[in-house]
Image 1 (spheres, rainbow, N blue to C red):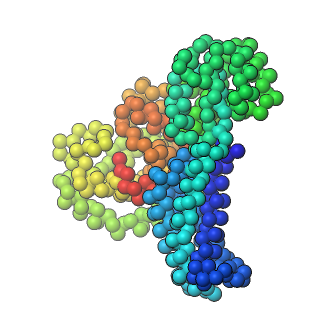
Image 2 (image 1 turned 135 degrees about the vertical axis):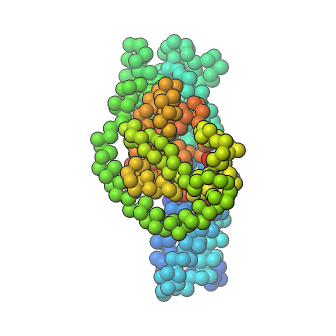
Image 3 (image 1 turned 30 degrees about the horizontal axis):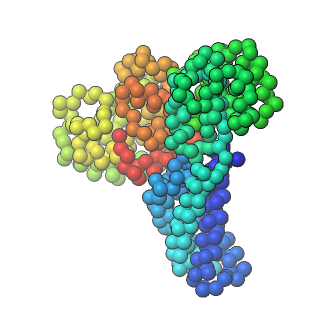
Length: 455
């Protein structure tokens, strides 16, 4: 069963590679108006096969391997068109750099391949979407205990059926589930009986500390059944890809946040930060005078904007950006969506993320990294710590130019409610920090910039 996120992604990847191979074969058939000879087909496949990695990378960057987005194709059609065009151009460039393929002349085949692959990928993804929604069996989920975040998970699973989970059973010894909650049962005996009857694959224990001895014994007897036991934060993280801050305790941090194991990777990450930031600085310096001139012409004031922010361990540092707001009558309150203080040039700089280029200085100095939670102002952190539990724990890692929250697809304002959501994404990143996650965030940031989704 494809209930695991990675399994779905591998399934899509294997399907894409098969589609690309078929597309190449059909392109040869159309060009020759005949089935290609085996030697000719093998030769073309050998030359095209390395470029398939570029196709997969571009599609991943476009978010086409996010199961919750991909399995319903309509919202992803524009991304698929863009990906196909870019991947075809990349393939053409690679062949050009290699001398147009050396022993093959793929100009006509490549053009046909680009068109055919798009339509076949479209058909394949449409089929995958229907199979994911209507054919593949969903994993049955049972909740033991109640909290206020369960309705949110129920809504997420109903909105994204391709995730492959379905709430089929719920029981709370204290009667916490509302009477209109369709999956609830009213007794422990009903619960145990229903585990098999409703094909439960996951049992989510909301609060282990509140389980009665009878409930613990009943769950223990289910060990021989084909079910997996999860705590509530673990299941919430699996579905929402963020952590439920309001339902964590100190023990969760002690069990899940181990910075000691991340030291080796942090050293590698720092070396990569220095190399990439230095390279980006050299490439971008030629554009700084033009950006500075545009800023000066748009409104009076300085070219750069500097402000105190909190970094690793609560260290205060000065962050640098190109100025995007008017200097006059500006109280420097946190920016809101559609903020009238942002100039026309500023809106463009924000949408393209060009306003953040000077933060390369912060990365080179060691105050920031390319990937990490966005740094906040010290005075705001002081207030947010009082309103949001565990807010200061986001300072366990170095702040970043981009982060897991920035590529979440949601706009989060400086309000307490939205900051609470941002912290959920930040803690997910801190818990799961790894090279693959950082690369994923970096690639998703490229797509965000291409969409000009400025904040």
